[in-house]
Image 1 (spheres, rainbow over the protein chains, first blue to last red):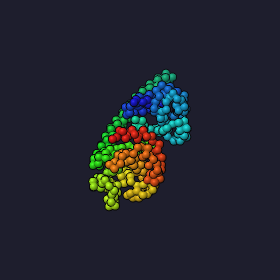
Image 2 (image 1 turned 120 degrees about the vertical axis):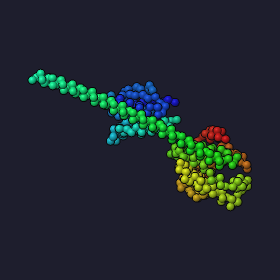
Image 3 (image 1 turned 180 degrees about the vertical axis):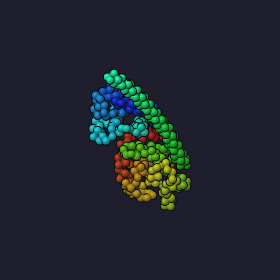
Image 4 (image 1 turned 45 degrees about the horizontal axis):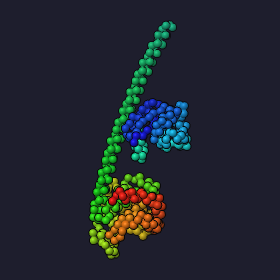
Length: 125
Length: 250
């Protein structure tokens, strides 16, 4: 089964790096979005099973986008992984309240990223 | 003077432009290098994962071979280990503990009776009741089993199940007479699955019981032979689940 994974970050290089790290590690189609507004558009169209969501973004930030992803039926019910800056305890709390499932602290460990996707993939298969 | 300043300024701007271009090129190169790292890490991860999966399969094949060797002696218990393992995994899942996620738990269930290889046929297949001596020898099989699997590191907590699968919640079991939560949870789960399979399969001296009857017997032993929480979890599993396993593994 091919699933959709959505990477949301306003820095195109971070998106590229995540895409490169995860390429063909599991069977999924990778989609990218540069901010919260775009993220919601893509999510409504692709129903991702997994979303990586940066917190600091223009227009709609990660927290707000997370809340919308959770409340809208059309976006499916993805596992949401927040990409947070270090020392962001209050941000993590907000993100949790908004419905985030997991956190990766930036600069994120690529190995942690790989293991996370592998684990989610094993669970779903 | 002003002319000189202007040309100096133009030169400076030119120099800065060139420097900026160099920096941008360097930055792009570094990004590309970083991407190479990410790609190589990914490939290494995939190779590691493939090796891990291979290893896991070898372990499973080895454990199955050992389990089959135990069962090959007895036509009546044939496939018992495989079935009881599937039952026990269902109960572990229903119980909602981390247990079902422990990889080695399947090994543990498959190998529970490995100690029986050391029990003479005359006792193992005796049609009548066992004498006291015979019974005490028979009750050694969990300890013999532990001796057999001792030192096989990849079996992890399997030894606990091998040793304690005949313990009873009320403390009346063997070989250690453990009671309640002294008995490892995997062994408590397994005990219920073991009895379920024993009751629902035919034996030389009695026919198989229907699932409903087996359920009644197990529920009656809640807090006696079995952990009440295990029985509760067992009761949430529909008949169809057990029937599907019984039909698939025969």
